[in-house]
Amino acid sequence: MTVKLIDTITAAEMIGLNPRTLENWRVLWKGPKFVKVGGRVRYSEQHIIEWLNKHTQETENDNTL
Image 1 (spheres, rainbow, N blue to C red):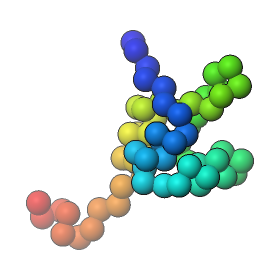
Image 2 (cartoon, rainbow, N blue to C red; image 1 turned 45 degrees about the vertical axis):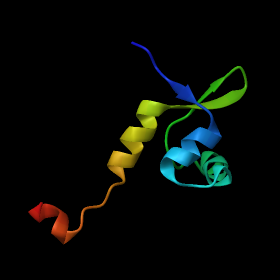
Image 3 (cartoon, rainbow, N blue to C red; image 1 turned 180 degrees about the vertical axis):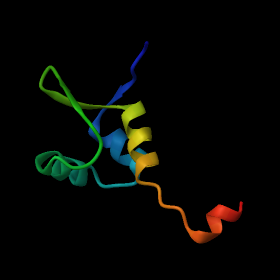
């Protein structure tokens, strides 16, 4: 299995956030899962997608599509 790891800037772009937000969330143990590789923070692209799916809200109109 190949895991694609991305940096904070790329992860923030995928989510639509400022990279500083992800940095702050790490301190608060919020946001998507992350790993440290050689002292550098990386995010699994799959974990970003899973986190987005988990936090996707449906509206009443979404149920009729």
